[in-house]
Amino acid sequence: MNERLDAIDRQLLSLLQANAREPAAILARKLGLARTTVVARIARLEREHIVAGYGVRLGRLLEEAAVRAYCFISVLPKTPAAVIRELEKMPEVEEVSSVSGPYDYLIFLRCETHEQLDELLDRIGLIDGVKQTQTSIVLSRKLDRRSAVGAP
Image (cartoon, rainbow, N blue to C red; front, side):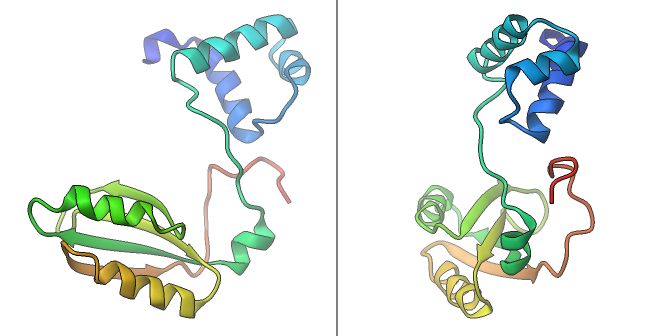
């Protein structure tokens, strides 16, 4: 993939990651390109699935008010697909990553209260195929490279 990206593509991706809603005219000015060139590059990056989509990053107000946790889970043989399907049904489960080590998956959870997190962890533990869980609550974020530069 990297051979398909030149320095301008990388700069453009960096700008889009910081603010995907930045108008093409401003992106063009920052890159020293014509607006139509920037629009064409974005279209190519989307078409080639280098840009998979655009989303919303929560601001500090909601982010700090949330109870966030990482939950490691190990699953029984032949059950991973069924476990993932059950996790997909839970809106508090924001991310599931397959990991190496003693656990099979690392799940990022976001809840409004500690009580909601407690109930969610009970539900996860009761999923057929879940063998073991270990959870750590996020106390504070020390570094987040995904945050927009200068975001409030």
